[in-house]
Image 1: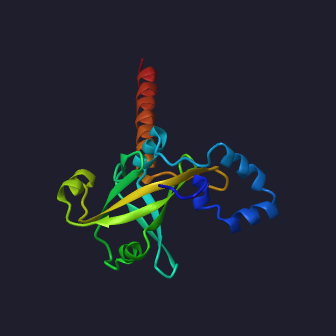
Image 2: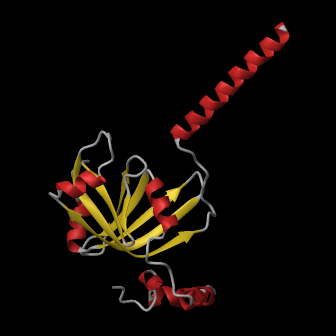
Image 3: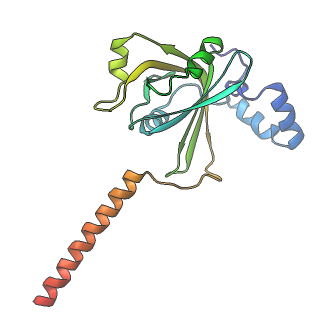
Length: 203
């Protein structure tokens, strides 16, 4: 259960609020708080956004407060919404430093940052995370089908609050596979038009 007065208090500490007041944005965010603050439950729209992603940044901090950010990727759907407060994914074997796992053992607070460059959307998710080992049934549920990676463990993320950012300053970029598909469709259209021109000229 969230111990804060508002869900956004997970980020808006008294110090943050004092800075907002000094710089003129506190009144606007106070109105957000009056409406209940940020959402905590995963909505259908958010679930669709999460499960469409092929990349995510997971932030943790160790017991001394030193932050760390780890990138995780996979095919669309590798991030799975398990219920209205839980996101899970198979943690694939990597360089075996285990910094994230060590941080979570000391400090379960975590943060997910998701960004869709093509649509210039980003989502920030605060919560707590834990590593699950030796759960074959859950791993089978989370492991992407036919994906060539070795799953090592599971990360379960419990959402406490989330917020969507405006698209300002997000560069528009596209996935290589999407670009390749668009170019292939263009080439097919060009080929058809060339054949049609040749047919009409021969008529």
